[in-house]
Length: 157
Image 1 (cartoon, rainbow, N blue to C red):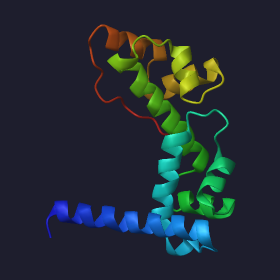
Image 2: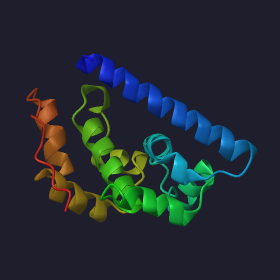
Image 3: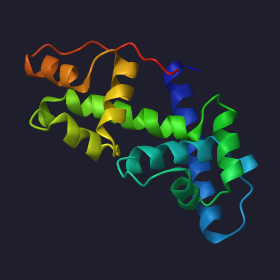
Image 4: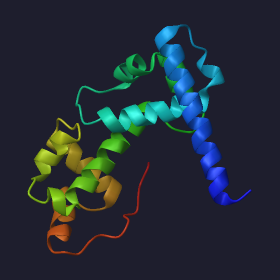
């Protein structure tokens, strides 16, 4: 089996699990223990889609997925992740993408922070610098000068 075939098989398997999880969540009791990959992928998709809302958190995610909080936390813990850290990480990554995009170069750092779900500018600045080793303003300036940053070193700690 070629690498491309394996990738397709994994994607299809995850899609089937996600579909089953969605149907069971909508129409009846669901045992998420049987569908961990699909539920995890669904959780990541919901996080990516909704994390720009500053009110978005684990309770919103639980409601969207139709699972218990304990199931959600176990799902992420099994992968060495936490729900809150994944939400914050996604927000910071989205902010970095916006700040270094020519499409969003007219936005100020505060606007980017707000669009990515941050309510406190100081916390956003601190987290951004910890993650990328530069301030949000520095990241935006690099892009404006036409110097596109290489993939930054990522600190997940």
